[in-house]
Image (cartoon, each protein chain N blue to C red):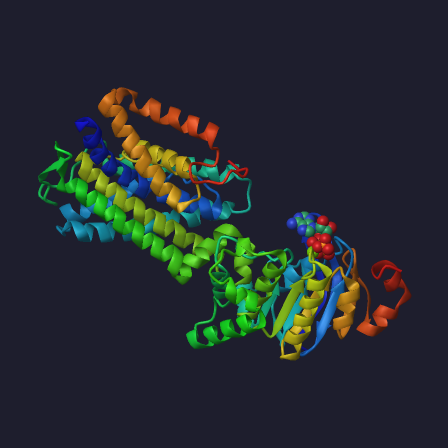
Length: 297
Length: 235
Ligand SMILES: Nc1ncnc2c1ncn2[C@@H]1O[C@H](COP(=O)(O)OP(=O)(O)OP(=O)(O)O)[C@@H](O)[C@H]1O
Ligand SMILES: [Mg+2]
């Protein structure tokens, strides 16, 4: 039982990070039906921006979050305008292949500019203490970092829900994702709304990148690949295009992964995650929260 | 002249959908555009709204050229469309749909006044304002689409087959509402396959056949025209 509860705690941290990344995948998919394969690499860029802010500008971690979110949002918007927007009326395959190309470009560009060194955030950036915890008489440990990850994720999700449901821009996003031409007839600028979606998703990825860098205590130019893929799986498991689906899928995947590692072996973790994806898609093709209408891609 | 369309040519790829059509709408009028399936009625409305780009021709609204303007700019000038098939946002609430109709307006006071006007006109929408729009009946969805278009306070409202798929009683109700909206000062360009009904509320009409205007005139004259009777009025 101790393993079980301990792995829930660990899974919630990992799941938070997956959920934050998955939100970006799902929002972009919701609005232009594109799997933005470069999304994990935007997360990497976010982790590096924060690194430079704390190391060279010597600002604290909160400034690093803010500047990295802004920088990543800009990067996301530039990628969308340069690489995806010109293909808006092309076949569905064209932007998908472009996204894969963009991902490779960011990864290799990252390796070229940043080198292959693994770096880590300076110590003492956040206080990371062990918190002893007793649950049903079982002694467990959580760290303040784990609590911070969970807290930041929950706050970000509340902010996102607020934006999507209660602001003018959020309503425009939902309208465009449902019917772009009808949205135009309302006077909505569809291009700007799509850009805003990329900006939001990328800012969320930046937060995830920093949290991941803190959690594993390292950042490197290829750090976006595996978590990006996993978060994509999380988004699909939850129901791609659905914001609550990304949240549920992220947490579910994080907990599932840590359970497999805890009870079985970490070597089996990744194969089992992808097996799970296949099984879920066989049973519920539209994802856990999705309605089963025929999806494209 | 409120709206003037001159020699409009519109293509979908190689398909020549509108072949040099011209039409006019005067302030205060209800003008109807009737024609069979595929004649080009929706294409005409969508080109006026800026969703489609004409190959050639001119569209002017209150003397200003609309050619090349994006759809939002055209909404801002005072044209709104109730599109074919309603195209409401089913995943948004009734109230949110109406708010989106007022997307370009910033006068909160005025927006709530317009919302109250819409609710007075369509009490059913007020009762269901918190409901997802997708759960409304067909007739209610049509009312929502009309209400949403009214929220931008248009000078010219384009309606694309508002009677489609509705029971006869509801069709009558929708046409009464269109007449009422017109009497309260909104000019209307009405596309219909239900030529009978359309000609009964309109002042003037145009007949569109495979991308060309083949007949035009006062609504009563068109309704009495033998060719129109044969083709569109069931005898
Ligand atoms: N997106 C499109 N791509 C290619 N051709 C199109 C497209 N939309 C319409 N068309 C063609 O253009 C012509 C005019 O279509 P349009 O929709 O304007 O007709 P309509 O008069 O509104 O017909 P209906 O009464 O069925 O709504 C038709 O031949 C149609 O097949
Ligand atoms: Mg049509």
